Amino acid sequence: GFAPARDVACGVEVLQAMHHAGVRPAPSTLAALVEACAESEELSELVPLLVEMRTVADPQGLQEAYSVLIRRYGAGRGAHKAADLVTRLADEALLLDQGLFSAAFQLCVAS
Image (cartoon, rainbow, N blue to C red):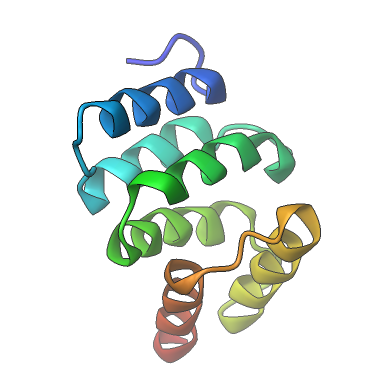
């Protein structure tokens, strides 16, 4: 487990170790890792984790992880929640990729 629930540095270390070992994390692993680190009030605190996540994950894994972030950090309801997170991530660090848009699209279709 992680020391405190929002230990983003520990999450980054886990992803780096997986990358160095040649292990691609399963989508559920990424979602669980983001969930464990998503206790912070500020989305910006997760940026180092998201940057590292993008080096080891495939689009499906990213989609699972971003779904967690949309639920936790998106403001509003339904499609507005997804749009809010996309905008905030673009403002934070330009972390726009296929996984994020897939998660946003999935939420919009479900709404």
